[in-house]
Length: 151
Image 1 (cartoon, rainbow, N blue to C red):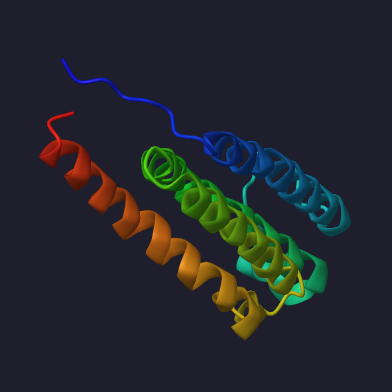
Image 2 (spheres, rainbow, N blue to C red):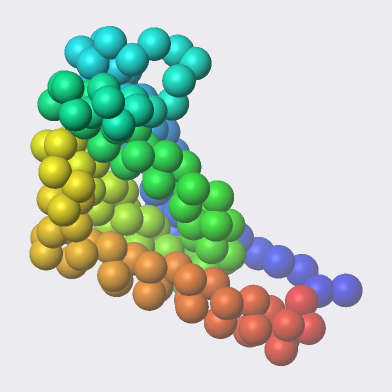
């Protein structure tokens, strides 16, 4: 029977995972603020085209709502990948998820301008690309290592 030992430094992985909570809270508060400013009522997720044509606030609401939705669409596989990668490479996993969190802040702030093109900046990509390249292929390689070791 094989055993799995949590490596030294795994607490940093946990810290990075927990750091996504304030990110989500901040994004939620940003969406709520822009919902109030735009007058878009629950349960609607987005302003329609007529509302956007009539109001820059509605455009900004749609943009921050989309930024938050994009984060939610990606977080589950990043959680899994970070934990898996962290079982062998905890410092890499924690740093990669930390970089992704920084990217999400830059992404959301850019999107909140109301100009969707500003969601992707050079600075944001400097955090995003290394994070994704570490977590996605890194977690796959880690699984391969575990399988090869008979774990």
